[in-house]
Image (cartoon, rainbow, N blue to C red):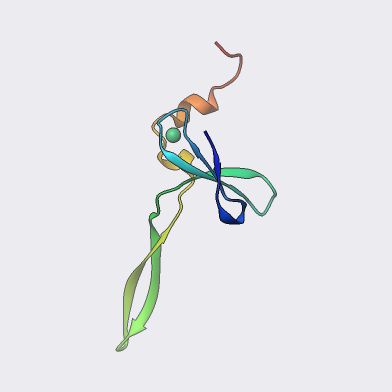
Length: 80
Ligand SMILES: [Zn+2]
């Protein structure tokens, strides 16, 4: 099942692991599945009182990076 939200955001459920996904276009015009749930993806560095402080950045990771079934998708040749 897929649902269109405002702004044409298309969501889906991963057939491999059942996670919530968002399909979004990359700058190359290809669709990429992202985890719907935001996680810490890195840090911004802010200088506060002359000290560099790590500020976590939250964002959507590529689903392939976290999917427990990612290997299944890569070997999707032939079919079964
Ligand atoms: Zn998955």
